[in-house]
Image 1 (cartoon, chains in turn orange, green):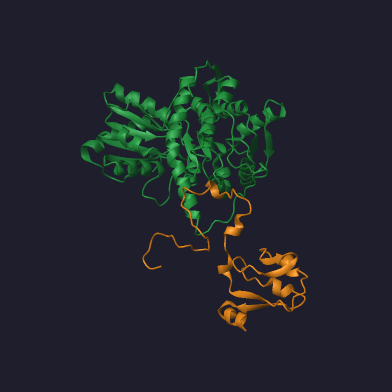
Image 2: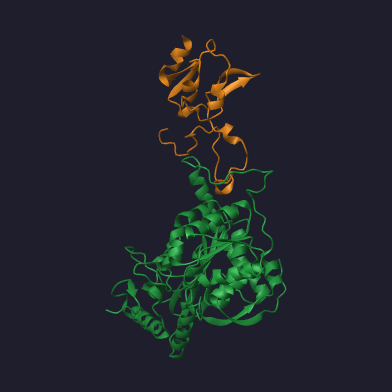
Length: 114
Length: 399
C-alpha cells in the first residue's frame, strides 16, 4: 500500500467501499440479504476441495454450512462458493461420504490440478 | 412553522413535578425508568399518570438503569417515541448503553436531575453525572430554573427527533436546587405541547416488517469510523436545530433562551460563565456588583453539547477578565469541562483573555451571591495585576 493514504483499498473484502455521506446512519443495515455483497472468502486459510465422484448428493454439507456457501443447482450439489466460504471445515467434518477435504490455501491450487 | 402565542397557566411546582407534567402532556409511547434520588419524583409522578390512564404510555419499570436505557434503545429502534429520567449513579450505570443509543442514532430523551457520584455517598447536586457523559454523543441542555426545566423538557424532543440530528438528548436540572424546589411555572395547554412536538416518524423502525432492517451489527475497521464521522456531523447540525427550536418555542410562549444567553453582558468587563441553576445566583451577584459600579456580567451556557463555540467567543471577545464556573471535576486535567470548552472556543477564534476556572458546589455545597461577588473582586484584581496563583481555584472549600 505504500504511502497511499486515500484508504480506497478494501481491507475486508468489500467490493466497493463507500464514504460517510453514502451509508445509512447508526450502522443500520437497511437492505435485507446484503451479506452476499460481503465477500468473506479472503478470511479462509483452509479450502474445501469437493470430490464430485465421491459425492452422493445427500446435501448434508448444504444443511450444515453456516454461510450458505454450498452451491446447489436443480437439486444437485454444484460446488462451493469460494467468494464466501470462510474455510470453517464443517462440511468436510459432516460429509458422510468423505467427499470434501480441507487443504491449506497455499497448496489448494496444486491439489485442484491433480 | 409559525406559531401563535398561547396563554400558559401559572402554577407552583417543583422541578421534578414540572418535568413529569411535561411528560404527561407529551404522552410518549414508551417510558422505561428506574427511580433514583433526586429524580425519583419524576418517575413516581409519571407512573401515577400511567396508572390513572392520563397517558397512553407503555411504562416499563425495570431492574436497573442499564436495563432502563437498554429498554429505551429497543423501544426507540422499534419506532417509538421514548423517554427516561435518571441521575448520578443511575447515569453511571447506563454508561455502556448511552453510547449504543447515540451510535444507533436513536432520538431518546432523558430528563437528568443532576446528582454527584459516589464515593463518598452524596445525593445532592453537582454535574459529575452529565459531564461524565459529555463524550457519549448526547445533545445536552442545562436548565436555569424550573420554568426552563419544563420548557427544555419539551424542546429536547423536537431537537432529538429532527431529521438533521437524530441523536439522543438530555436536559439537566440541578438536583434538589431545582428538582425539589417549588417555583412559579407557566404550563402550556396540553394541545399546544402536543402540536409543538408533533408526531414522530422514525426512519428505520424495526416494527416495519415490510422494510426489515438490522440494528447493532458488527462494524469493524472498514465502516466504524465513517459512522462516527456521521455522528460528529449530526452534532454540528444540532447547533442550528437547538437555536431554531428555541426560536419556535419563543413564538409559542414568549420564552426563548437560544444556545447561550448574556446577562448585563454587552458592556461588561468582568464576566462569569456558568450553566445550570447557579446562573440565577450569579444574576443576583451581577446586580450587586453593578450597584457598586463594577461592570460585571454573565454568560449563561444553555447548550453544552454541541458546544456553541462561535457564540461563546463572540460574547466574550474583548472582556477584561473571565471566570468559568464548573460544578464537576475532571481529575488530573489542568482545568474542568466548561472552562476547557470556553478557552478552546476563545483560542480557536483568536482571543486570549485572562481567564480562570472555579470548581464549585460539589455534592450540593451551597453557592451564594457573596461568593460570586468575591469572584468578581478577584477578576478586577487579575485585570490589574495579571493572574497570580493557580488557574483552577476551589470556591468555598475549607482550608
